[in-house]
Length: 101
Image (cartoon, rainbow, N blue to C red; front, side, top):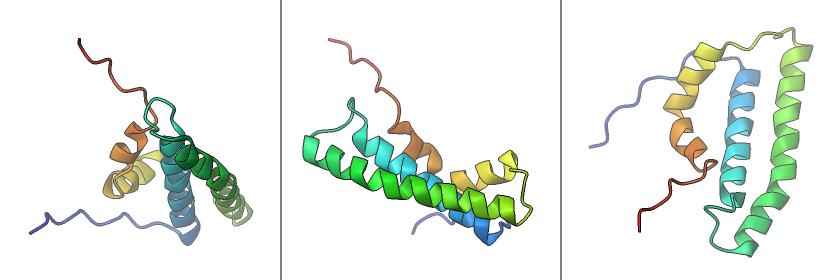
């Protein structure tokens, strides 16, 4: 049986869209990362998708701002990112440690 995940904190719909779009951008960048990619076609497809995902991220932030949600609550959103496996997903953006020979 899988361990039960903690519940997501209460978020507005715009904050949910913000986090979802952010993680999609992170996932795309992880697939593009030259230190982790295995083929050019996969990286190309991820780069092409990145444009749309970045636009969705911009739109989510624009909606938040237009609704008067001018503040970002880092602690709450970080908690949500942890529940959504954001730490593992963001690790793909880094250069892997050098392997000893």
